[in-house]
Amino acid sequence: MKAKPIMIQGTMSNAGKSLTAAALCRVLKQEGLRVAPFKSQNMALNSFVTKEGFEMGRAQVVQAEAAGKEADVRMNPVLLKPTTDVGSQVVVLGKSVGNMSARDYFAYKKTLMPAVMEAYEGLAAENDVIVIEGAGSPVELNLNDNDIVNMGLASRLNAPVLLVGDIDRGGIFAQLCGTVSLLSDRERALVKGLLVNKFRGDVTLFSEGAKLLETLSSKPVLGVVPYFSLDIDDEDSLSERLQAKGKGEGIDVAVLRLPKLSNFTDFAPFERSKGCSVRYVSRVCEFGAPDLVVLPGTKSTIEDLRFLKSSGLAEQVVAAAHRGVPVFGVCGGFQMLGKKVADPFGCECGGEEEGLGLLPLETVFGREKCLRETKGVIGGLSGVFSCLNGQNYTGYEIHMGQSGEHAAIVNSGCVYGTYVHGIFDEAGTAAKIVQALGGAPVEDEDARAVKEKNYDELARLFRGSVDMKKVMEIIEHGV
Image (cartoon, rainbow, N blue to C red):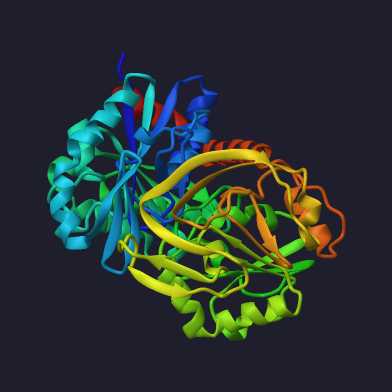
């Protein structure tokens, strides 16, 4: 029997579509249903590599985990990874098909519907419900031709739609009623209910507002979801965690906020640790005197390396390392710490750039991207983080270029680098780093156990604020 679809659309980016879909995946799993997430086209730099070596958006990985499933590239058949303000690398079914300008992709995307539908149908044959996530807003009217991710897909699948609005950002009536009013009659009929998301304060105070929304939109309000903070991976560049600037309690970890920063979820183990605080730094005046400097991953290593130099942050990093402050580079940040980064084939921006010279390596981009899961035992380290020797790790690599190093982590003095995303996730790793930096001994939980607790709490919040009986009826009866 083919799965029944339900689609989560939003009034704008970061309205809460991804977490709403994750919550619904978890609730349906708890109800004993086989459920899988699906987002036909995702734009994100925070990506993941499946065990088969395919690249996909992290939001669908989170939703798969919430559904009790392994990540499957069919859950996100098209991934766009911005390389410039007007272009992206296009990844189809987990493999890059090249870089395209926005204009070129707009023409190209109509050829992708067969791949999108094949991925969806494969999942639908194996599950009871498919929770589909839209992208941005469904009423970007100039982009609606050949739509493959919002109402174009909902219409093709005859999928009922729940529309999510973000009341925390204001204008909830304009958001929800305006969106509904701009839909075509056919599209409007697909919308079966509204969700008011991120409400702060006493939810009962919005009872009159909910009635007004229903009157003005002719759609039922199925729930008012409170504002909450849970330890669940983000993928959106608007993530609130990236706004953290001030030093908190304990060890001070400064992560450089690169313009094309990717996979910032690598640092979640430190953010949840009671022994340190994490802040994101984009200007010299914010650098301060950190206990640990981190250069994160990036989709455009050379361009972001040039940003570090032009902003003055490169000098701060080098000076900190010379003072003995530990510096840790992950993926693209690791490449920046070497002597040179070269992109002879124009895989990203082309050209070459002298690195920070803190590690004795050079990186040359080839034509193929490295995509693989990896696990093992950390070894061979000296210096302050030699405490990590013997520690297990499980993660994945996703990068252009090779740097001539194959160890999980390499170091030269107080400077360390790795290609492995997720290197800090194993229970005990972040705690050992914090303690090595002089922090009080703390125990950190295994990242997977933390996720499971938070998915259950997300489902509890969703059940408590949304009319799940009505949602289940919508799933059962469709449109």
